[in-house]
Image 1: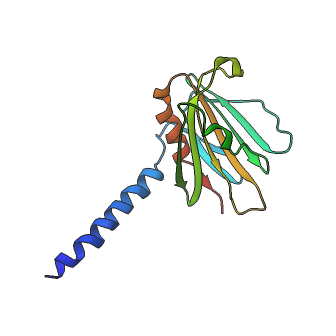
Image 2: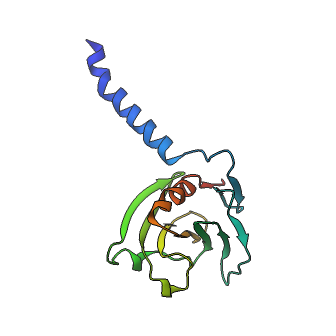
Amino acid sequence: MYARYLRIPLAAAFFLSVLYFIHRSEPPAQWKKVDAKRFSFFIPPDMKLVPTRGIDSYVESYRGTNIDLKFDYGPYSDSLNHYKNLSGSVTKTLKLDGKEARQVSFANPSASGYRFDQVIAIHFRDLGDGGNTLTLWATCRTKEHYSAVEQIFSTLRFNK
């Protein structure tokens, strides 16, 4: 009789644990850790650091065979607000390492100056550290590479 009452809480706990592990995935063994002091994430082994200079933020860029990735940590990182209304863009809200984020993906014209046309980016608005925000921006050779970027995003950890 009591088993009947436990089904719903057990099913809910199972569902929540699956969601937890989907959003807290472990990187493949050969991926490299990027330690950005306030946060860290993992990238595929073919990605290399590219010299980059920020004006008012902590900025780094990485270049790989199929993905270029950069992050901007500071008070003025791109909020991604102006991309969510582009034709064909996809926007979703998710939570990574306990922080709410907005993810946007869209096709970017080649004339934009980026090496690849497909963009997927994520923005964390409130990091609880005095007004700093974080945006990770990736351009990909094709949309098929979005899954690798989403896996990079899922490895993001904020240092306490």
